[in-house]
Image (cartoon, rainbow, N blue to C red; front, side, top):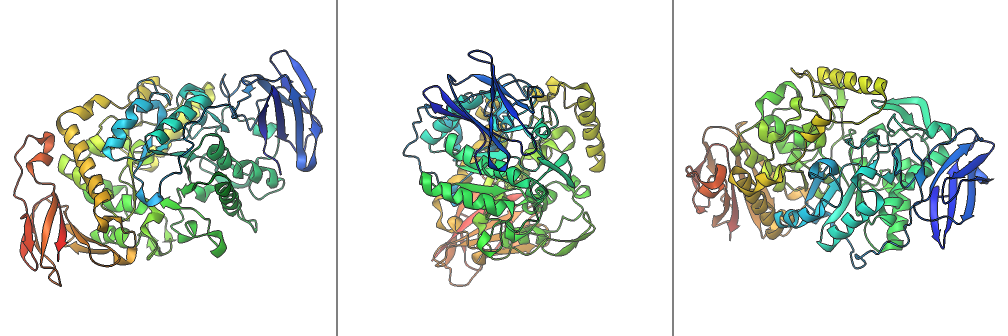
Length: 616
């Protein structure tokens, strides 16, 4: 089957290809350089094609299924006039890429940074991110993960209402803006991941049903009609979405994708959609000569997500580890226990470190059933760990970040718990300097009935989570503006101290061999009376050992250092030192010794992290 969309061939030639298996005719309606209507030729599997002369990059066009009326191209690469306007031809041949020597970064070495293009800067564009790359790199961040950039209605949206999965949001800077950002990132040694959505399409500007059976009523999703991956005429749908990763990897030099909510992609065919996509991506890897990463958000709690299709898996490099977030979040924020009723035990956090999935077959109250399978023994680089992301912040009442919910000491513990974990860490934009602006849910629809439906749906969603207050109005522009980062905060006071704390933790992660081992069989976690825990990290040859001592309580905890063959322990990091206090100008409290004898008895200060390396 064929790639669809408008493929510019150079020399003012363009090949148009659209899938409409149940249509008798298809007209290509070109609006420039002069108005032309061209009958397209029907080919196998329901594709209509036309190769046309005198077409230039930027020329606008519509399709007319059965000669009915004008509709944008479902596989449009650019919607310069928004979701209801004409599609435009994009020239992917002539962009002058500067990253020809870029081969990507090992996945296990990444420190991911999730950001929303519209709220990351005042300007809200791809190019406005570029001046901040140096600061991110100096912090230790070497991979940004963009929230969805597929064309959405209006000028502001989280991105999950996208209706043109191949097009780049015009208000962010369109195709060229994204290419400039990726090029600049690669020049600075930063990889680029992109969040993509294959489980649903947004409601406004969605004309897919005018062309083909892209949807099915066999299944339902929380966001509307389910994509047709296994019903009648699903071959073209599978082709459409399985080619989308290739589009981002090849035309935009993206390094990796994050696939939204893969558990709501329903497919019972013998060759699963994810298996089909996996082999297409692997084939493209060979062509491009660089590794291409596919990561997942999954509610399955199943190791098959990360296993290769050869053994019945989906083939993802890694998945987001929500159980880690829930386990840690509830222990840092007491209020959260009423929202995460199945979490709250220190042993659960210990299991999140040692195994991965916390729910691995146990009965879960929230689900009213047993859930999950064990991931014990799976390499740590198969998981992405975090304490904040767009969902966890945006779906909190008031869209509050962790910095607005817990004190400075607990914020430091949260950062350390993530960055010292045997997983690939991810920060949410602004987290590195304790940004406290909210990250609200926002949209910019034009249909009044849809706006009311979104507002009502948001209120009902908050009611389901038992929040005590109503959410901000998603349609209001101020809701969006309130979510923009305030970058100037990072230069002084407690925000500067938190930024330096993150820099120190990432530096430790990169320089200590024990923190670079992802073998879960060498991870040991010991709880201390539901109030703290000890994370033991060690190399494969056991030559390097590190103790990460966490006290999550407000009282000192007794602790005895391991005896074994170690002669002692050297302190590498102590959250209670004065330089790590709020604003860096307060006197530190009692700290553990710079060197501890093997078998010695000590007390872990309240709300503290101390890291030691074994002395042989």
